[in-house]
Length: 525
Image (cartoon, rainbow, N blue to C red; front, top):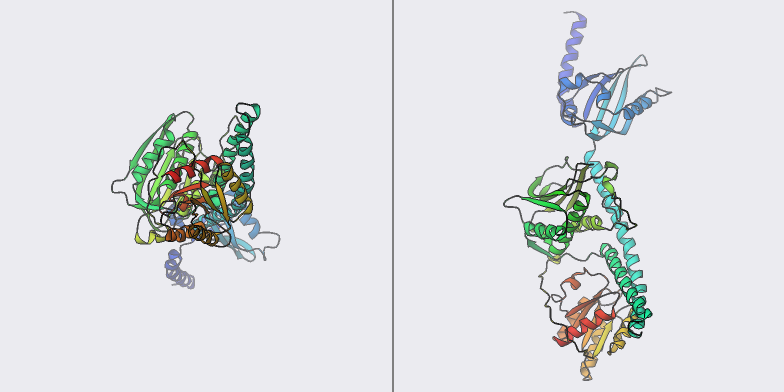
């Protein structure tokens, strides 16, 4: 055996010794020459790329690394001063796998030199798909947090101003001559105020979504009702594929109904020429989620997918579809798109679920909702409640006067609501917060002049809010007629007011007509 043969044998033994270590690495490790021919790959490169070793060894690096990234890598490695740039650390790029899918990677590379001349390039890359998914989700979450803070301020200030405007318009309306020009104009103004009030409520729902009223309910029933309601006048068909023995889930029925209603409407709008929407629901256990464009933690989920065969969403817009008022749809009017998918993301997030969207322009779009399957850990005691049906009664024709206690922490709101109540023929006493309201209520009973009804603001900046106040009042007077008041229509106390001890609700900004109807109803029940 010659000295050269002995050295070669030693090299082979050393290679075998380290081959196992190299192959156990999860990273892509490969080597290519100055012509780009790949001369070595590890098992990680095969697993991530989807190619076999023999296939990779017959390929050029340009087959799996897009040209822009390859040129950038070479420029960094072999710049003006090669001694300083012979190594690349943490260079982000993309890798083309067997399915021609771009995989985000982080590259470390080094030039292998011989007498200061480059022979090969050692290429080590880490798949950062999960990290990118987390980054997208973090950016989206941060964006929504900013939106929530912004919308809270907008809603609160708009409510204050709109409340006064509505009061002035209503006052002028009831004192104008019926069928006159002014009367008709004021009627139109009332409708516009109502539209703006609904817009404020939509904004407010992002900033103060309220607690969920969870219940264990049928996913099949939820989907059927949502799609039938959304598409009853649509030109598209829909078809269900629901897995048998679908796992249970705990969710707020009305909130999730809104989610699938919005998704159904968007899917139908995408299919201008008609067609069929496919809705599926299945049990799924996630160990990893490399097939999705967001990061979803491992666990048991109910996956609900809605597939339309419409115009699709270009890839550059896919992460913007949940932004408020974003749309790729072209309309012939100046109408601005709403916040349907923004609410979808917000509601699903509150349920500790996830939303994923994928699209092939001109072919299909799939929106998938992942709801945690029911387990003891998923049920939050503080947001579980019993729902009660509201009892509808025929509106009384006669107005019943009475004495009203009005509690609100904003002076302008008290003044506006008080003037409305005065116009309706009620005597009004004011309180700034719950404790003061309780004291006034006690004193009125003691004096033999009790209140006929109490209007309580649920959200006060300082002092006792309406929820705690009604409990104290009920302890004093079990027959107390309390009305919950809030600018946030989906507060749990507004949605299930009887459960919390109230007899009725009125939204803010106040409307003279809503006050009249609510008071008339509870005082004649």
